[in-house]
Image 1: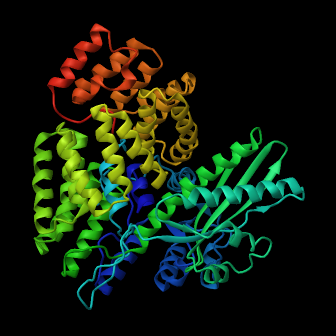
Image 2: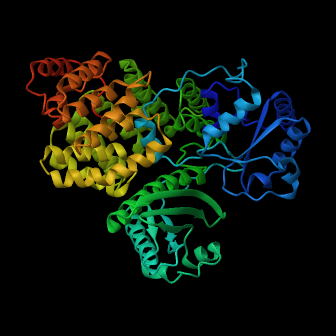
Length: 605
């Protein structure tokens, strides 16, 4: 679905079964018609795709119709079965992550800049950096099917299933050195130990201890058998290759239940600081694994705490949530909303659907700053809590609304309820930390934010606020330590999500704080090239310029942020990033204006 949406955003007309077609005759007719009309046929390769008779039929139809076929590998080195070898013989495969090559191949086969749109698939607006904060938290909290592989029907009422925060049992097998040098083997063993230590400290992981793991050095054998022997589901395996002062690590994350490779990543570094490199690579690997396994938990769980016994309402809910979780355009968000509203028409007392409905309007407010959207979100969240007061996410909506209104006491009240429901939750600690930060209580903020990043290494916005806290407390050593730990994580994330201006500006802030001005300016230039920047991003650019002691640029960006509707309120006067410009008359005038206006809060997105 992400590939499909990205192609649509690029201006292509894409046909894919998005409607959960149940009637076989209608389904087969639509499939045949779509294949006959298409110019390019993409087949996504995995072990599962060749287990589907329908996929094989569709490929045969496309081949017989002499369509341009592009095989896209979801799993690396997928072995072709006899049924498809003839149709795919001699056709070069493209890895799923190499999107530019996929798009280039499509354009080459069509001979056009973009495939002409049909009325069924209008041209999407150019993708703009959407605010991920609300739905990022929602999906971290709700375990859902991230793709639309839904049960066709339910023979019995839906039951409550395991929660998203289910412990993931995994083993990190000893990394294999591809060199004959004994010192390289020691490096590989040290890296294995670092990765085990780092993962063991994260929430949701139960990692096999190092002593047990090292028994498998040199005798890994059958990975599913090893996993069964150790009682784990996930296996991390890797190789280390050194050349002169350079080191390259290949990492794989394998689901031993299905033998599916969930992740394959390469990491590069230099040996200038051997132990520092091991630590850096271990954190980078943990960052990738935590994000990947968080996603896998969503994919694995097709049923969450429903609060409905209506199977059709549940199906509509999951489809809608799938659209909203992968949102890249307002049009897509509205489509997701239509499914949520249909679920509520089928079951008006569906509390989780009410909560997601509230999240939609909270997201819409963040993007458009329309106060009426905030009122709707508030009403929907309170309705959900009236139906089920234990819904963590509904309290998160109310906490977010209170924060937007500048009502920090109310926000802290809701987050206290969240912590009672989930005492060890990353989102609750992160949110409370942000509230104390806005109040200027940096010691309390840092305490909660440190807990948050210890539980979830992937929360880059939390890292940014934590760094600011130690800057405000004058603890330069801790500030610099967290900056150094987070910079490689930003590189990893932005390498795959280059359009995320909100995260990129946090990266620029960290670079500015570390005195890396040239790199910070590079990030700001990249952000400002975007045609659609959220007001909060301008605020954070102003912070970066202030940190670098460039008052003119800082004031210009701050004024732009306020002009576009951002209102950071009283927190503008406690924000430590503005210490270099706080006494300037121009800043005081802008601060007065910010306090007098209520709206989106500053610094977060």
